[in-house]
Image 1 (tube, rainbow, N blue to C red):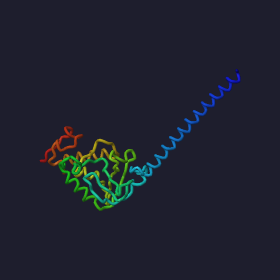
Image 2: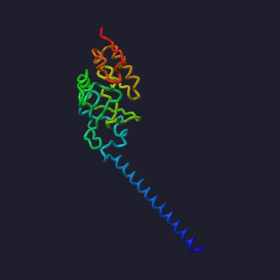
Image 3: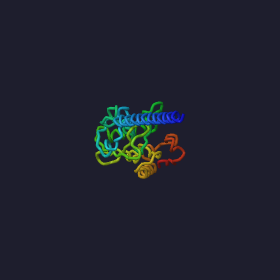
Image 4: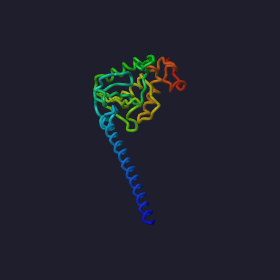
Length: 213
């Protein structure tokens, strides 16, 4: 009788070991699949940006081949499954001209024209910030430095062709805000005849627009 009980206990022990072994190998298989997916994703097979954006773009030069609007442009280097890389200018927001289901906004065409004259067909240098390299639309966020060393993002704001975007922090945030204040007080560009309704939603009712003398 005691031999039967001992054999039964050993059998139960083996069963527990087998169950534990199955769980271990199942978990190991899941981990292996996840690791493989991460590696494939980093290689860009899912159409998303590779994880080495910093090395690929930061402080490197590219030719601007298309101006989408005042704050968005394309450069001549593939990005995943796309033939070109789309750049969203960091820290600046220009009036809309091509947004679906949105009218052309005040000073939008002028903003696009300014960016076109500054960058189209020219070789520019990109400057990224590590904290936020892509936006929600997977566009590359960057400062665009022209051949003359001028920062396109800042020039758009300083000349009154766009707004200092306060929604996200970035290294030149204070400088951009100061440039906007100066442009607004001097009634440059869009500030010459803008109304509160013309402003982006995040500025409406918050900025006093001076009247030109």
